[in-house]
Image 1 (cartoon, rainbow, N blue to C red):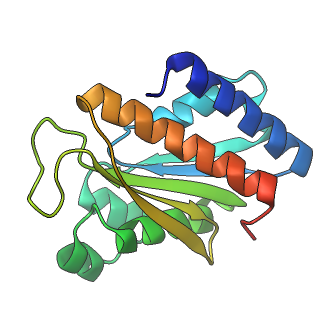
Image 2: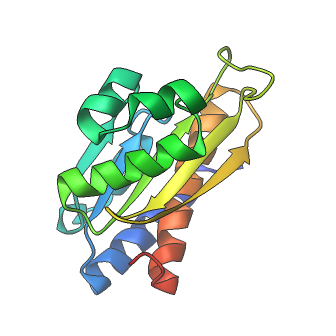
Length: 167
């Protein structure tokens, strides 16, 4: 289970890596409502690596701000691999960031379906041209699901910077 101190530690590590590698980050968040951007901007000096974040809770915002296809939303739904790929690529394209993360999920307590129960969260990490996505089934109440998704997003960004596997 992700803790506030664990998230703070991940965000600090992420900012250090970004500054060392001269990488600028962006976020495209839905179910986390800006939690990843908040964790990053809680780090003093984060303006050196973070300029833009998107909270696209509604599908219309995903389309308008990130260029997510209406066809993708209709065929796969907002909580899908296809949509998070489009979200992260659109965020990086629009912001000019080197690396980004996108998150879309069902935090609960309602909104789940048999195919996408509460706790289903898709994340994608990448840039304007390529991305990698992964689906998680998280446990807990709404705030726990959101906190765990924030931690996973930060951890994935750190891993990509440590492995230099984002370009």
